[in-house]
Length: 323
Image 1 (cartoon, rainbow, N blue to C red):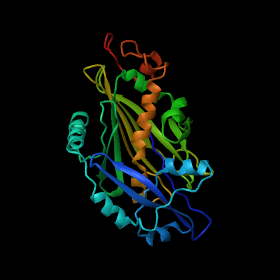
Image 2: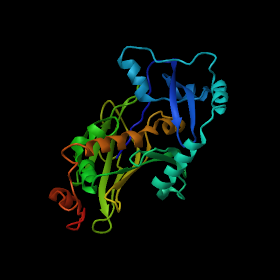
Image 3: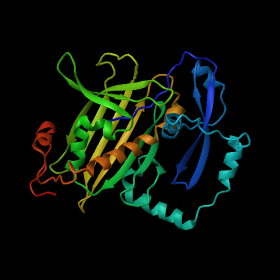
Image 4: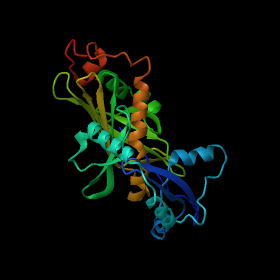
């Protein structure tokens, strides 16, 4: 279900502030700094004239703003070319590279051969691994997060199904409600905090639970329906969304959850900015899902006794005795 990213048009003109952010690409073992710009006024013209590298990490930026502090700035000597030269001189121990390679092949072999490029690879089985790939006919990339969890499928699906919990685990979610169309169709309507200085976003989507065989994997597929709910003042409607949660049972009692997201945030968000910021979506969302599954309300759920309302609502099948 969902990631939200946004930059809005502002009435102020000719102002840009530069901030420093930090990004880690574990798969390559390289730490890279970028300078970032938050644009006001004529955003398109400003972006066209900008030649600096940009990475805007919203959680870091907002932390400074909430405490009344100015975001940190790169010194004048730390130009993008200077930073790149520094990172090229870094050395990573061979043991670290070997460990990352082994884990990436063990945990994410199912993503290989599908055009996915690793972005972040964890060290433990329960760590989150992320990937990115290009999509034809659009400059906006598709992102994926994969994690293995020592809980039942029912626990994960119950959290995903309960929209009253969305703001507790879905990244930047304000609220989620159902919207009933004129012909009686029920859609999910979610609202998200915008990344400063952006407008908030909302998205209208159709979500369905799909299962091919009893006890087998379940896919929760969400597709944007931007024209099927009235526009809301103060929110920019997300015009395109294609998200899915794939929840798979593993032989040793663990499960694998794969969150795949592809979206156009709408508004004046250049694709290259959307692609940079959206890398947080799979990580933060799967971290939230894991956290919710650890709570007392869900951690003891078992497929041998799944909640009746979940099974009947989505026509799921879990054979008795299958744990």
